[in-house]
Each structure stands twice: as structure tokens, then as C-alpha cells.
Length: 125
Image (cartoon, rainbow, N blue to C red; front, side, top):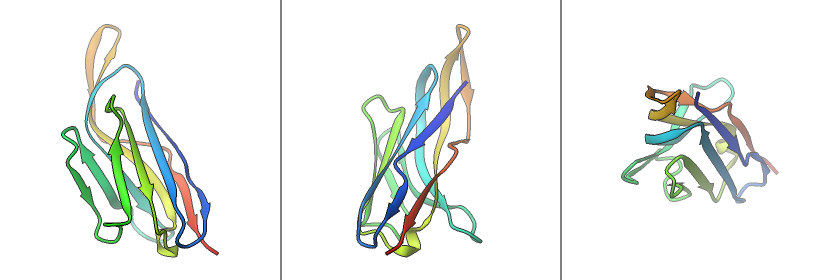
């Protein structure tokens, strides 16, 4: 089984920084794409940033230049460095992983479209 475990959310003042981390647990062989999405109260979930296995990144326009996404050397972790935070960044942030290959009972299995449990980020003075 595969699980995504997030950490690093919290309360920060406007202009501050936070770093979110996400690790995929299980006998992971590879993950094609990982990313972060967020959902504010009363709004739909939206893409924040993604990174592919080739380290190609994509950002939402609202966070470009302020947020940086990166993957760990083992490629089963992803982090989001958030700087110059604004109140409108307040949301639950979800880690996402797609096209996962992992080993289970001696077999290679595949999983798609996995989500973490979410971590709250609140930007407020």
C-alpha cells in the first residue's frame, strides 16, 4: 500500500515563510509526478505546483516567484517552500502523487492519483 504523509503546515504572519513536506511511504519504485494543491473554504481545490520525474516544474500564476517546489533525491518526497505568504494563501494544502509504481508481495503494482490527508496553512496577523 502507498500513503502520502504531509507535514509543515501552521500559522504564519503575512510576509512570512513556511515549508511543506510530503513523503510517500511503501515499497516505492518510482513516481512520475508529485505536486501540491490547495483548497480554501468555499472554493474548489486548485493546483499550486507540480514537479515531474525530470524535475520539470509548473506553478499557479498566483504563487509564481514566491513558492518553490522540489523533489528529494530518492524522488519519493516533495517539498514546497512558501515565501512572502499572503492571507489569500490560507487553505488546506494537499500533497498529490500520480503514476506510482511499487512492490507488494513480490509483484510490481501501479497506483494513480494519490492524495495526502491535507495540512492547514493559515496566513494571518
